Image 1: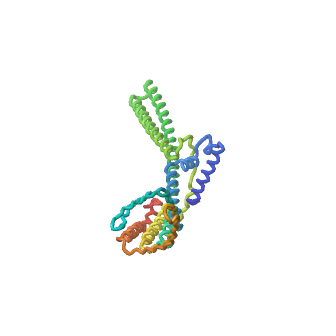
Image 2 (image 1 turned 120 degrees about the vertical axis):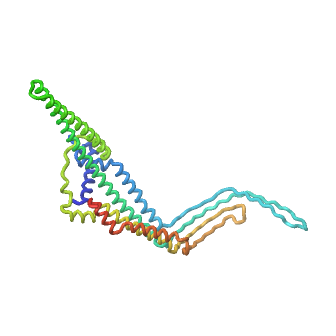
Image 3 (image 1 turned 180 degrees about the vertical axis):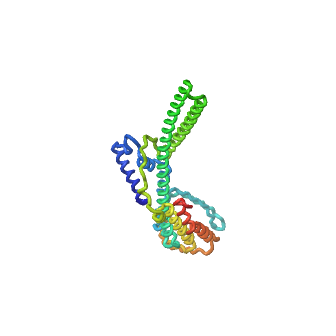
Length: 359
């Protein structure tokens, strides 16, 4: 079974346990908690995983934002209100200057609509859309990385708690045995069969056993708290884990091929290369001409004047050709290009080695 099959298996177990919970059926059973049940709880309750899911949903919104560049933009404006206008005019009459004041109040209303559509912007919208889609794919692979890490931490916490519980039981039985040995040694000392040195040695072994018991108790409490932190629930009676050899590739060559094709870390890095390349193209698109068309219509009412109603319509095409803008666009393209070079075949191979613990 490959990595996708394992993930599908976990998701199937999650769905089964969720359905069982809806009918009041315990997924882990009344007797013991299983490793599969613990993985389901971690998959549902782990805060890091929930946060990464929210980050993926936020990244999904980049696609409709990028697609909005293909669509027109429409707006409607309106203005209503009273106006006051006053003026003073000087008119020469019969050699004299006659001052004539003028004042009036009137109500005006204007309604207008404006629409704009970008016909060409240097392929920036297309590149932004592809970049947003690559970002979503990379975020999904990052979510898979988080899922793998959470499930690994859950399995590790489960097995560590199982181990520390067994060690604690062993140390308790060891203290019981050493206590009984000390009692027998003292009885033999009372009848003269052993010396006081033998009693002191038995007491020393018991003290060492109690110290190991306290250490085992401390480790058990730590593992129990880590189980609660990773899985999200308090542990119950843990059942023994099941072997996972059937889920692993049979040979190292198969593991390498499977890692190259399905490892989320590798796939996320590959999508990161695409995102960097498209970022360069978006920056270069700012150097291309920009062609857009704008249409507007407005109508106004001013009953105080002779023109009771005025209508205005316009359709304008605008072409903007950048000639010199201070070199900022060239610098942005060079910066993103250097960022793109951070992931080269050398670093790609390093990611592969890290994935298999060979780096």
